[in-house]
Image (cartoon, rainbow, N blue to C red; front, side):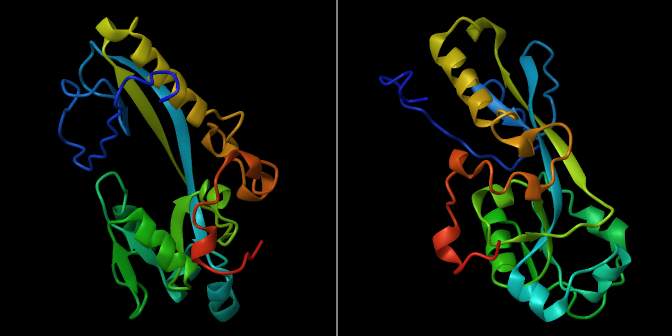
Length: 213
């Protein structure tokens, strides 16, 4: 992106307040739900798929759950944050949880990853987790989640070279042909973990020891 517009300063802003409408402040935005402002140019950018993951250390100690009901016999790491459907855990296993079921609750996806990688429990994570590290193991259960994400920009900026460059950059980052975990249809992590490794940086590999896959 900077190579396309070297004279500009690019400001990347992360905002967890899903209720606020910041369309008047932003040139281009990525959002979980399409904005209410019908004047904006809006398009789907990608689909995120979620499934349970655990570490090899956890699985060696506690085994793998074989059903949704069996999750109650395990430890679970929960993320509670805007945009995260935390209430789905209540719908899956109920609110009457066994002692020790939830050893870690966090609002940070990085903390969630760290806790799971260090044997704290099982967590629902995006399937691209196995694209950035091979040190987690996907768990097949008859329940998965998927969420579409969208981008938008203002129609009067359609001809702006920086806006065009930003949109093209986002499309490259989320290209489902290059990164299959962003496809509309579910692609199992075992089908892309090795063949697409050259397209991503394994950012967390040095943080958590030896590979497990």
